[in-house]
Image (cartoon, rainbow, N blue to C red; front, side, top):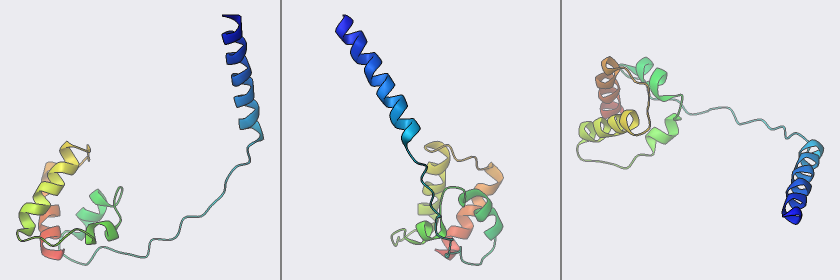
Length: 102
């Protein structure tokens, strides 16, 4: 039992010493160069979607036959599965924009 306690204390001290000796890492992320395409309700999409997605991510979705149904399902998934805080009043506007633009 003493060996386990000694090992735990040794590991804790080593972790504290290691973290105090670690140098901070500084880096600059690249500027966003992509933008959502112009269209009706663009501001609603930017306000709701840009917090988690770049416009590049939206543009890389695969081609689909029924764009409206696809985007409706995607927006619903963002709300129900991922907890996106999108107002009910904005859902239709987002789907309309995405279906017309992408």
